[in-house]
Length: 125
Image 1 (cartoon, one colour):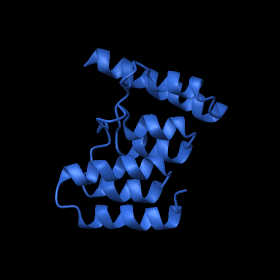
Image 2 (cartoon, one colour):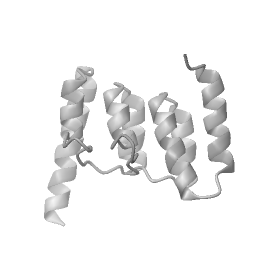
Image 3 (cartoon, one colour):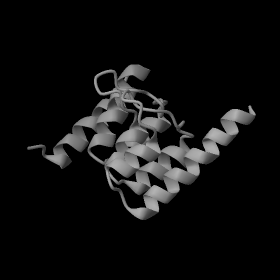
């Protein structure tokens, strides 16, 4: 069993002392899995890539936040970090992840709206 406060301190320390973007990116994934919103924000401020895809799972922080029903973290990633909407390694778009994970209606609606807005912008560029 994971001791979340201990894990949070360890991940925060890794992010604080990270010497390269790779460490920050791995840290943002770990923090997203543990719903450590403030640690994710710290990693983003230090230069972590909001769109980094974990090579082991095929997920980015946005996929993880949505699957965990973490609306605050999803908003941080979309609104503050400008996270992109794209399918995970299994071809699931964020809206499908929301549906499969049966997240709250508020998060489902938000993801659907933001994904549609992203795709509309992408086509017009």
